[in-house]
Image 1 (tube, rainbow, N blue to C red):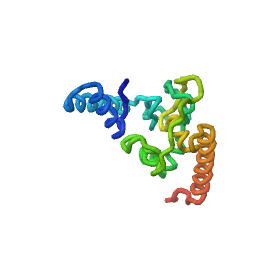
Image 2: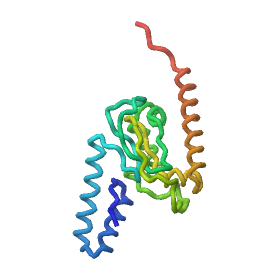
Image 3: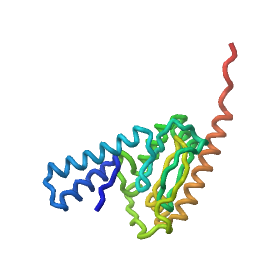
Length: 186
């Protein structure tokens, strides 16, 4: 069984368990899991796109709305636009990504189901496996298992909920920005 390349605590635990089940000693299993986690961190720090199974912030200097980053995403996944990620972080993309990681129990917060409710993963997503996409820096990739969790086990309903969230955040952000005073005149 292939190991999970992610920075999450859950992936680390799963990798240790997989190596132990494969007959490796505890220290060796830990060393392998740490190496996989370190490689995932280096990949993300170098501006790499998230793994199609794990999602997360698309870390790049390529600005939002300039889709130029080729990557693969698991069929059924969802990409949250960069302006939404930034808006959720009150103008800070890193803070917005952290909020989405916490909300979706991804990244350094593990990969368990939303909240304390555990919804079983669907057995199969739409056919197609990995789908090549072109993304932009600051966008946030949501893997299909998380989309299904959001939709109560239904990927299509999860997409509808995420679409509604994007529209709501945009409307709220526009309303907030319109209330702000203009620049001070000297």
